[in-house]
Amino acid sequence: MITLGDYLIISGILFAIGFAGVMLRRNIIIILMALELMLNAANLSLVAFSRFHVDPSGVPNYNAQVFVFFIITVAAAEVAVGLAIVVALYRLRQTTNVEDISTLKF
Amino acid sequence: MMLVFGAAVIINRNPVASALSLVVSFLALAALFISLDAYFIGIIQVLVYAGAIMVLFLFIIMLLDLRAEELRKINWIASAGGLAVALALTVQIFSVVGSFQFAKQPFPPLARHVLSGADGSTSDDVHRIGLLLFGNYNLPFQITGIVILVATIGVVMLSRRETR
Image 1 (cartoon, one colour):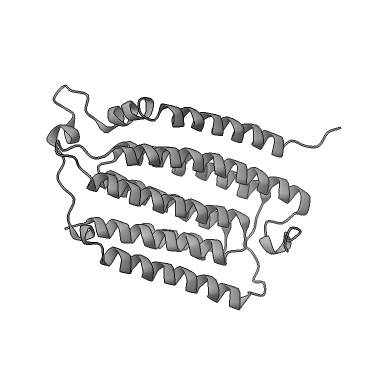
Image 2 (cartoon, chains in turn blue, red):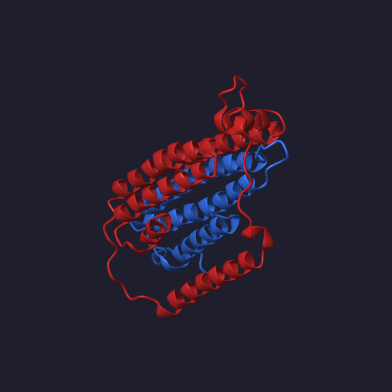
């Protein structure tokens, strides 16, 4: 029997993978992909809770799914802006490695 | 399978292989959404993530002509620290979910008309999400539209060549 906890654990592991990616990788594009993984982990737990919270007439709680819709929209906008910044940086520096872009580093 | 390909995103050294494993990971995640009876979210996941966003990623990777990053001197202390923090996060999530008594219950059954929608009443989840989106969440929906407009203008400004 698949329980709510299984989905939550899968979501947690996915978030941890994304977090490790942000911490370990040095390529900006792969860091952006790992950010997408973390957003999707949040989406998965939201949808699992939505399915778990069923009201007496047998309808799942759709508020969480509307929230997931907003998250997906904002993530798409964020990726577009992030990749535009990457392209502008690459034009300036010919690199996508975060260790070569340390002008703002304290 | 989703977790395997999610880990492959991190492990692969070639950005193109990494992006392709991210596509497979998103498709598996869409399958999980559909197994949770969230058909609308699953379809949106396939269309927006596996379609649009990944095409954008692959386009940028190939535009910049990134090759597999060379083995440079790895900062072992930073890598071990990042891995340790991620592992600590996983352990914490396991312990929190384990101590959460709702997590051990199976999912309650849905009403039949939600699953089929075949009784003539428009009761599929796209209909319900649409009602909620344009009813209760009308203002956030319009704000989202403005966010996308601002993002579009920002991208155009960022990628404009300096011509003067």
